[in-house]
Image 1: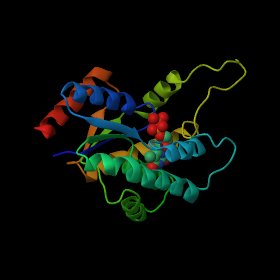
Image 2: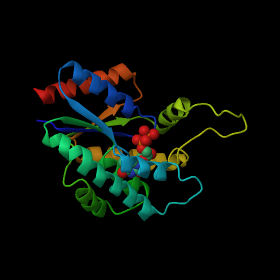
Image 3: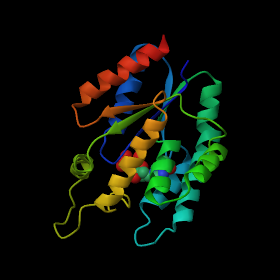
Image 4: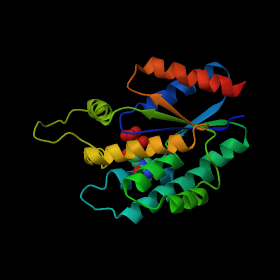
Length: 215
Ligand code: TYD
């Protein structure tokens, strides 16, 4: 029985597109599911998301960043995820606890065991039953992420990028390696999918896996 499916991956890996396709597919099979995301997913979470991604020139210290993501998660689990699971709905979540391990752990060097404990607190002990890790080379993801941003109105303005997209390529490599290491440690939960393929091909893999789990 699966109740919570998370989608993870780097920028431009297509996880949001895949989540929406799965949502649509499950709805067509009469399965009621709730799609949500982190950071965000609640009114307070959307405020936290704005703080995190649009901080502009404000430098966010690493522990501050961590606590903001955890605060977002705690509220999200309390207000959205737990009630949905309690009512028997399948929850699809765009990023969850593994993002904290990859970005704050492998990326910023925060101790992984401590992060696991903090994740437990923030998620009220809830872990995903299945996680789809959409993996692709960093350059592929970054060029996709760039292409989907609206062009600047003024040619003199730099293209709009969030705080994470501005990070250097070696950070993206660390996050990617982190996700892959997490997947190696938990192969029964985390499915690594080659996200450089066509959207439909990736979706079919996801469908096959979910179909097997839902019977
Ligand atoms: P998101 O909007 O999902 O990014 P994308 O543009 O890839 O769809 O998430 C915003 C950023 O937040 C993303 O770069 C990863 C980061 N993040 C963390 O650093 N830690 C976390 O715990 C979470 C949930 C996200």
